Image (cartoon, rainbow, N blue to C red):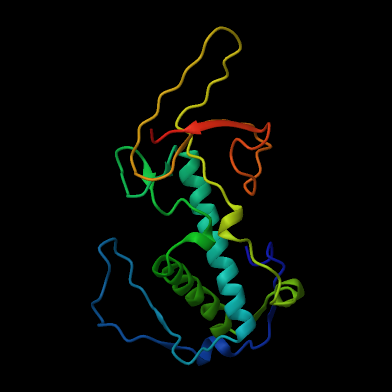
Length: 199
C-alpha cells in the first residue's frame, strides 16, 4: 500500500533494530494460541508532519478496502448497525465518518508507520501528497447516497416498486440513470424521475 500511494521508503539506519527497546512482559506470558509476543516500545519514535499526512491517507485507504469488502458481501448503509440485515452506518465515504472512527483508524496505522521508522526506515509520502494544502476538498453537498437492495431491468409491460420508510424527513422515490449528477436536484433533468415519497 505504501508503494502504491507513491511513498519513498529507504533503510537508513541498519542498527535501529538493536536500539529498539522491547516491552517487558512476564516470562510465562503466552497468548491462548501459544504465541509469545515481543512488543516493541515505540514511545521514543515520533512521526514528522508529512508522515502524519501519510497516516491519514493510509487510514482512508484502509476504510475504502474495508467498505469494498463489505459491499461485496452484500452489506449496505444503515443508520444503525444491523447484523441480520447487513447494514452498517460506517459504509460511507471516509470524509463522512465520525471523528472517533477516523481516530481509531489513524491510531492503528500510525503504529504501523512508527514501527517502520523504529526499524530504521524512512517513510516519506510522494511529492504530490505534500502539494498545496489549500486544494479544495470534496464537499458533502456534492455527494448523493443511494441504497439499492435489489435492481431489476423491466423491458416490457408494467412495472412498480416497493419501499420501506425507515427514517423521517424529506424523501424522494423514483429512479435515476447512472449519469445522474449529485449537484443537480433529483428530477430536475432527464437523468432521474422522482416524486415526493413522504406523502
